[in-house]
Structures are given as structure tokens and as C-alpha cells.
Image (cartoon, rainbow, N blue to C red; front, side, top):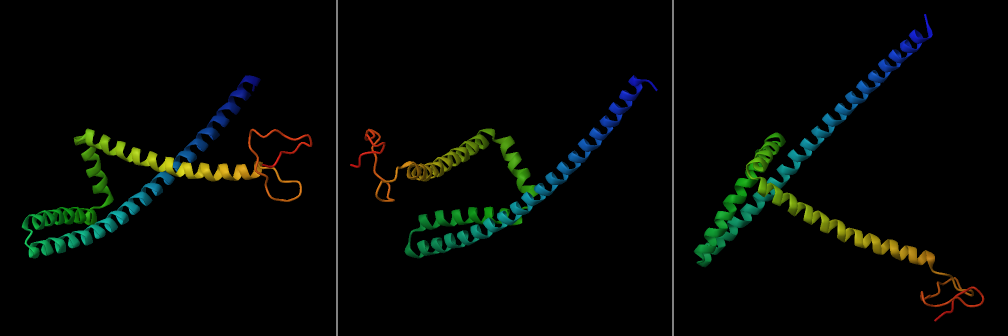
Length: 180
């Protein structure tokens, strides 16, 4: 066996080990993806059923309001409330009966048929998300700024209480700050 044949054999063996490791990582990634997909579908089923139940309750409240308006003599208001109750009831039934597969397929079809509407919904969700992040970041910034300011504030010579220091206040000859 020559030196070249030995190095080629080692390279082939290491390539085989690398391929096996790559295959194992791919299998594990596929398992994780399948489990995550199953969990998402379970949550979608559960949440859609919960929302459907809440919508049913809302539809019943609209029907009661419609009946009340009808008794009061407001037929046009009663008609509008009754129509809204019917629509809400249809949506509630769809959410309660539909599985995650049907729901996702219908959502995909909606996006394909009305891309402008899907884009508008995406933009609205993005806008709301950005506003939420901005509002939450302002409170985080304020709290972190306050804690940094407390740490950076010098301590008075005679007490342990922080001394109010203006950025324009020059240090005294002793290296401290004048208290104002």
C-alpha cells in the first residue's frame, strides 16, 4: 500500500462518517418539524373551537338585542342586529367544526384568490405588531435608563444618599461635585 492509497482510504472513511452524521441530523430535524407541526395544529384546533364557542355566545347576545329592539319598535335596528347575529353564528359554526387542515387550506385559498386582501391583512398585522413593540420598548428603555442613572449617580460624602448632579456642574477642587 502506498502513501497515496492510505490517505485516500482515510478520506473515504471520514466522508462516510460525515455523511452518516449529516443524515442523523436531518432525521432529527425532520422529527422536530413533525412534532412542532402537530403541536401547532393541535393549538389551532383548540383555539378555533374556543373562539367559535365565544362567537356563538356573542351571536346569542345579538339575537337577544335584536328581539329587544323589535319589541321597542325599532324594526330596522332589529333587522341589522339579526343579520349580524346570523353572520357571527355562521363564522362560529365554521370555527367550531373545521379542523386545522381545512382552516389552513381555506386560508391559503383566500390568499391566492385575493392577494391584495392578504397583503392588507399582513400589513395591518405588521403595523399592530410594530406599535406593540414600540410601546413595550419605550417602557423597557425608561426602566433601564432609570437603573443606569441610579448606578452612575455619585454618593454624597456624609450620607449614603445620591447627590443630585447637573451635567453642567463642574467638579470641586476635592474631586467631588457641588450639591445644588
